[in-house]
Image 1 (cartoon, rainbow, N blue to C red):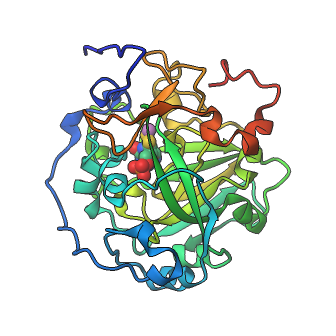
Image 2 (cartoon, rainbow, N blue to C red; image 1 turned 90 degrees about the vertical axis):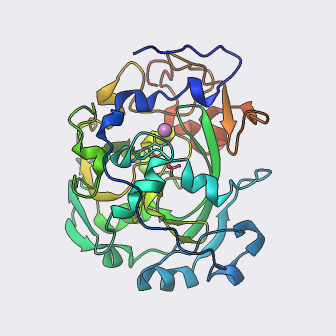
Image 3 (tube, rainbow, N blue to C red; image 1 turned 45 degrees about the vertical axis):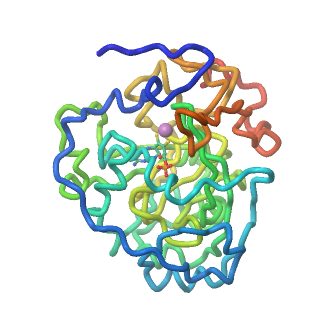
Length: 337
Ligand SMILES: Nc1nc2c(c(=O)[nH]1)N[C@H]1C(S)=C(S)[C@@H](COP(=O)(O)O)O[C@H]1N2
Ligand SMILES: [Mo]
């Protein structure tokens, strides 16, 4: 395959689509699914500044989610000076290879994902392992709105208002043993509803796996999200439960989680397994450490077009250095990319 090298001065979409190079387009079968529901005023409009949520498509939240929403801590973390990415962009420009390799594929195909009922297994080095219905899994947690920058390793970025809770709260519930050093996350594996998993060409060894060091997972910025833009997660964004780690490249933020394990050894994560020279376990956003094929010094903030590419400098740890730099003191970030 011919790979066009981007010049150092730009990061156009046409030149940086690295992750999809690894997943065959021929995998995609089936057509478009569920017609989108009509736009409606979100139910929670009174709970927060409604102007932030103009044009958010109404979802079909399960009862437990609606109940939680009423007790949400709105704007628990904001992104000062940043405009929230329009809902339309955040839900129609996605990476979710289980549903295809083009940015529009997840929105077109993820309607087949069945998110109810949904079970989450917690196992490994924990005092309290278990298998929970999502509704029960969520019981102990208050939802918080976290407005975070999301920076993909492909050099585009967004600003998304998530609804979730800190992983530290989960760890308190499940009681990691003294042997636990990492947390490992696993996405649903279901070739029947995930057409990308039916491909015999894709290099991804399904299911998608991600992981964090335990101290990274304990950082208050690391959350598990069940919603965004004041509603439940759309399927293409990783419904019904996903990770969000805002100081790391987007591929760490694994979608549609069915299993969370506390483990002794560093997990073998999906992108690291595919191309270890390009994608590391840490994957901290770092403008000074380039990807072998393009610069990471800049990013395209969506929405971004030919005439207004909206390119801006990338910030160390995606702008969260104050909160997370201490996790990596003494670590060579060039070697541990
Ligand atoms: N299971 C799974 N999780 C995934 C991915 C994926 O392909 N499969 N893509 C990752 C990548 S590369 C990015 S940039 C983010 C994108 O999240 P978004 O589509 O909600 O913006 O999801 C991440 N989580
Ligand atoms: Mo990504």
